[in-house]
Length: 269
Image (tube, rainbow, N blue to C red; front, side):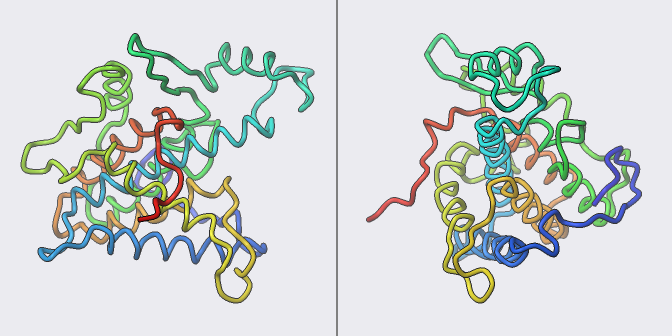
């Protein structure tokens, strides 16, 4: 993966599931999600690259938020000095708000969105997270020939997402018309999150994976690894700088949406 400072250097690292009982189901999930999303988006004309990158970005962003909700429930977050996991829900909520770790905001229309360093730590390098999405997709772009100083800047993406919350412009990619995806990021999230969740939670895998699903803590990393592969796979069809920008903007925006409004289960038709 890329050096967190995006210097173009690489650093060796070990997956958190390496050598554990979670290794096989996690690796199977990476391959299954990759192959499944390619199949989901395949048409008679092939796969629309911009739609593919927007879709995996949306899923990766929402996986980050999902992991944060689980961490908060388990008190697996930085706690106030002297506090332990027995801290009350109200005290924890106040701490997360005051520290900017996990914050909710409501619009005049009643929509709820989520922000904070805990979510962002899964998206871009910072002390609150490990294995951020940016590290993988930036490394892929560099491997595809992009110079580190030509990588897109995520800061304006975060600002735009915050500024467009509650407006019709929220979730609309800032990209030239010829690169607009065939479905928007929110439509992609609603369509593909239930399928992704099914892959991550299934326990009928072969051999050592049988009876085991992917721990929720690893969901952002699984999706980030798939995102990396898609950037590499699409490098000859789309400038990786554009592809990474689309993917990251989609991830940032969809990491903020209210999970109560996102379909969670596969529909039975």
